[in-house]
Length: 218
Image (cartoon, rainbow, N blue to C red):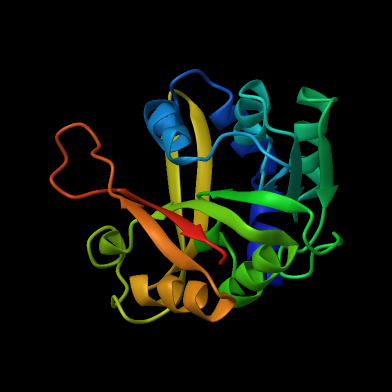
């Protein structure tokens, strides 16, 4: 992450922990089961890139995955480790992982790639720690929202912040708006082949809010 995004998510860490741990507060609770259906069965080991406070890692562990979680925010990593002492959680730059080559057969990145500046580095490192035949499952905010929810041209990369308050809980979301090709090109450069694409529906909203991809490292 850049210093800007690292600082933002560390500053918002306490708000984020309260937000995501409030039942049904976040869209994750609607999308979770369908997203996890896209994830392969437990195998060698699983890396949760950008694990935050650990909700995805905990759900993966409950399904039998041996999970290591990585995040750049010390506060979020501490919260993840406290909530799941059996897991392994590390503070690290996702574009420079302190992990050996060929350690995992699955990398999960749920709603994190739009929060990092070095998408190419993130995906190169994901490929490096994966075994041949390993898979990457990721969710991002759908790039189609760039021109509708945010005042940025679709093909430009821009940092945005979005303050929200719900049920008395404040949160300032922050991340990068990018075109879809920024992600697909980075996947291609890292050696991944996209094998599944999903655009989950959100209630009666006519356009998708999230985009899910599963990619193979041949």
